Amino acid sequence: MAMKILLSAYACEPDKGSEPAVGWHWAQALVRRGHEVHVITRSNNRAAIEAGGGAQRERLKFHYCDLPGWARAAKHWPGGIYFYYLLWQTGAYRLAKKLHAGAHFDLVQHSTFASYRQPSFMGGLGIPFLFGPVGGGETMPLQFRAGIPVAGRVAEFFRDLGGALIACDPLMWLTYSRARTIACTTEETRARIPRRFRLKCMVQPAIGINDGKIGERSEQAPDRPQFLFVGRLLYWKGVHLAVRALAEARRAAPEVTLKIIGQGSDRAWLQSVARDAGVIDAIEWIDGRPHDEIQREFRQCTALVFPSLHDSGGMVVIEALAAGVPVVCLDLGGPGAMVTPLCGVAIATRNITEGDVVRALAKAMIELARDSELRARLGAHAALRARELTWDAAVEAVYAPIER
Image (cartoon, rainbow, N blue to C red; front, side, top):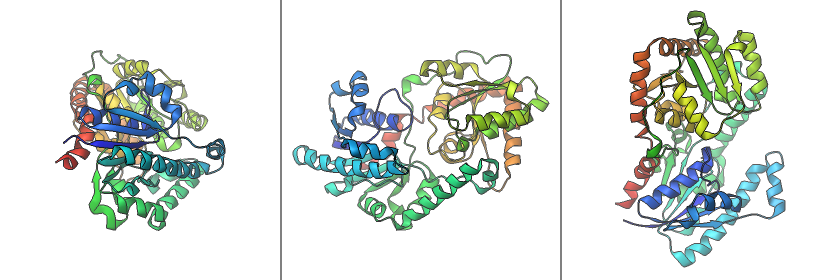
């Protein structure tokens, strides 16, 4: 059944990762399902949207909502991003009411920001309201906090506190109560939704991959085993665990190296971890790479190592799987749900120490470095797994029950 859908997508931009990719690709996938889609986003996304052909597609229209300069300046205040985002949601709702008066939408979906802590007022339109997929309910296990900087421990405390206060937030209760469906990216996020609303919840990742980007690896991994991390260099991404695992792995396999591609505020700390572990010379640090070069890096590495400690998504994990690359991660959040024993290794974290996790990561690295048959088997299934994680599959899972 074709519908007329309004999509609230604060972040929506082609050829980007993370939140902008979610807004853009959900709109595209809904159009491919035969729906007419109207998207509310910000005008600073307009140039990229028009360059990406979004503004010229049939059944897809973009509407731009912006705040005055003083409100945009609030983003730079301490904690001001939340105040700014609340104001933007208010403005987006006013625009949505005007659009609905003329277009008469069948359904409204809030897609970005994809956070279970940030309210949406779209449920006030009086039509079926889909909230999500939203994430952010993942928490860093306590046993891993001693190994991160003090500032990170403080940040995790306040992050946990913010999650606990959701139960007292009237705007979030209003959002949840108005929603017909609450789509959560992980089971951890679903467990954070107040109990009375959980019957509305389903678990579905927000991120995906396009079919055209999926294919088995066409190039052999180099003779010298090299593992790859791609992402922001932040304490909660778990790069320090990969660095310490490298040191452990090199005791048995001295030829193993690690390439780290990304930028972030914790780079200096991570390099100090590498120096203390004695592997600073076994790591190649690269600030960034264009997307097409990242694809080449995938094809030339032994495996992706992505031991994030609370990631709702993990776009790089799907991209690695789509390139036919095995993934080594933790059994936490989005990566832990996406990586199966057939396509990689998800290290169990329940009731074990950080040292145990480092040793398990090292063991996986050694096995992948030495066993070419294992790499080939996991790589072949990685591409198959990616075919289950497309944008179209994500939208199908959420919309099929609604379209009946």
